[in-house]
Amino acid sequence: MKEGAWISSKKVYFQEPIKFWEEQAKELDWDTMWKLPYKEKLPYFKWFVGGKLNASMNCLDRHLETRLNKTALIWVPEPTKEKPIKITYKELHEKVNKFANLLKRLKVKKGDVVSIYLPMIPEVIISMLACSRIGAIHSVVFSAFSEEALQSRMKDGKSKVLITADGYFRKGKKVDLLKKVKKAVKGTKVKKVIVVPRLEKKVPKGFINYTKEIRKEKSFCKPKIMKSEDTLFILYTSGTTGKPKGVMRDTGGYLTQASTTSKFNFNLHENDIMWCTADVGWITGHTYSCYGPLSLGATLLIYEGSPDFPNFGRWWKIIQENKVNVFYTAPTAIRLFMKFGEKYLKKYNLNSLKILGTVGEPIDEDAWNWYFKKIGKSKLPLIDTWWQTETGANVINSLPGVGPFIPSYAGKPFPGIKMAIVNGKGNKVRVGKPGHLVQLSPFAPGMLQGVFRNKKRYKETYWSKFKNKYDTSDGAFMDKDGNIRLTGRIDDVIKVAGHRLSTAEMENALDDDDCVNEAAIVSVPDKIRGEVPVAFVVLEKGKPSDVLKKKLVNDVRVRIGPIASLKEIYFVDDLPKTRSGKIMRRILKSLLIGEKIKSTTTLVNPECVKKIEDGL
Ligand code: PRX
Image (cartoon, rainbow, N blue to C red):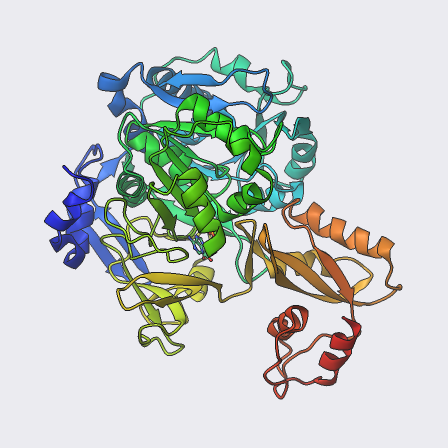
């Protein structure tokens, strides 16, 4: 069928989302078919009620008959002297099964949370699939996150087992993970730590050696058949309050949307090689570096290291050498290459590429045009995909073969998903007018099923602002043809280099310093990273100094990780506040970017605004 033809022949799907998703779910292997496709009692909803399946079987076992010796996974290590490793479906199946048996030996059972703190090595994919094989809930923590971030996630998940590595390579250097792990496990319920020996052959005493132990296991583990609505994984993400929340995901609905969007948005066929550059520590990596491509029997590629090692030609070299067909990355990376990478680009042949994708933050027109012209040679579809940790898979984008591809517009909602732009009262706004982006019933199958062990937070965060509408916390507007342009987050979440950070989490890290009375974080635009955080700090004691600045910058990095690097700290006497005590970050931001302040009448301390402005 001509690309895109399916969509015109099946227009009916746009009117019947449940039917559409049912049709897609049938592409998966089910142990028991569902009795009811969709059930809704807001703020909860379930997909494929009565259906049973196993995610690892859908990603592995069902391909064995026809794709036994086909490459499932290509792993590119960072050191150039190490050769890429290709793992076939047969080998991946065996590794996952052995590891699943090891987890069982360690008494992990259905419903237990297993934390995974691994770099981009094959074992991260193996671990996720091994958990799903036995019905354990995986909770992946980004390996560049700090020990405190890891610890709080393990505590919240009450995990008893942690899977990690001794370290990994980044920018040519060895990064030690065990140092952080040793500190992080203290005070948690983690009793067993499995270590993948990536850097050294041996693992220190007190840890379980992954390589040694899986050798003892049998190569088949009977999969645990799960209900469609059983939890497949949790993934922590930042919100308005300081504490990250564990976004819960079901099995059947998630796998359906992960698989369908991989197929339609990236035109992914089984002989294609997909490289999604996102780390598996983020939702993009879960869906498009693991479950999506594997459920379709395609080949996925993962790369361990940095885009600039040994130089800015590395990514293009990987594409050329491995004949990557689908390339999915973030605007930040594109901007980085625009600045540093063009001269390297000429050396490589990127003819294998057929689809380009972008995700994580709004893409500006310059970056879009560069990506389209330089990487896509002005002929490849460039799919700008809008979605969130909470939505689990792509939600708004133009389809390859259908379009339209308009720089900086994400496009239309994916078939079967209803999105709207509303005002503060929840009423639809007219064409061109910015408003809140919301999702309407029936809610897409990949959507979050709750916040782990926190019903209240689930209801308050997503369902309290608008009745019966899921609040994305993003701003957007629509053109006359229904194409959506995103304008950024409306809440106190910022996106630094496409990574989601909570201003409150960074403020808490500053507030915990004895010298600090209170702090406010705002973001300012940055040419490469999209936006970067800046802090305003009121001191409790001590004097402003460069030494103190350095210490505070470090406090935040230690609490969250290096992505939370404050660009600047301004010491001030007071922060602008409303009568109810809310810090007006918007005013601080306006001061920083030279925007006119509309009004200070709602403030209890309007005089501080002028003082801060003078200080800046
Ligand atoms: O603000 C939107 C932005 O990233 C947020 C979600 O971040 P996270 O949960 O980390 O997931 C990122 C990857 C799916 C959204 O609320 N965002 C994501 N994709 C886009 C985007 N903003 C504009 N355009 C996009 N394509």
